[in-house]
Amino acid sequence: AVTLTTVGQSFTPLKDFLLFAPRHPDKGPQALPVNRTAEAAGVGGITAVEYRLVVAGPQTYTLTLDELRALPQYEVELPIACVEGWSKSARWTGVRVRDLLERAGAPEHARVRVVSLQSRGGYRVSEMGPEHARDPLTLLALRLNGEELDPDHGYPARLIAPNRPGVLQTKWVGRLEMPA
Image (cartoon, rainbow, N blue to C red):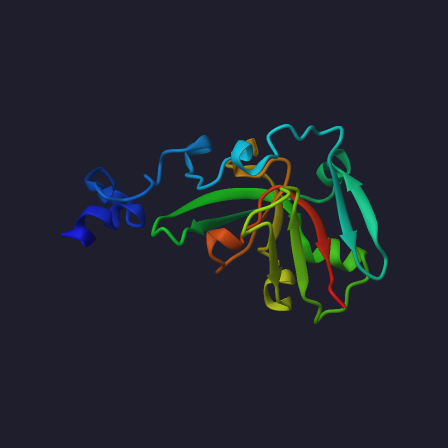
């Protein structure tokens, strides 16, 4: 019975039968659920003018949001698969993480620490091995389904990578670091 009343989180044709699921797969900003809002994370007031992305590596550099938008943009369709049990695919547009790493002079085998602008929280920082960081589908996303990211989905920039749980798709990204 529990399976039948929660399966609609991942198998959306059965979404009308959701009774006990924590989130509905179509409810949320930009028709995609969120489990932590920008307000709850303390990052609701980020403006395009003040945003900076720091890419810390052998050749550290900083980009404004306009500079990120001016870089080659790629679009991928990837799901967010939440540990709560729901999953939903979306179109994400942004800059390939591997391109940002190459500009910083990161070695091919480098691990990457993705740091959020939120000041606290269990998922403020995530780490990626080279298999994700160098994957051409891994983006620092600026857009979701053709629209600028909503603050609750990580505006101005968030990580989206294939085959990683939603909690590791860091929102409100402020730094990409290559730990020594």
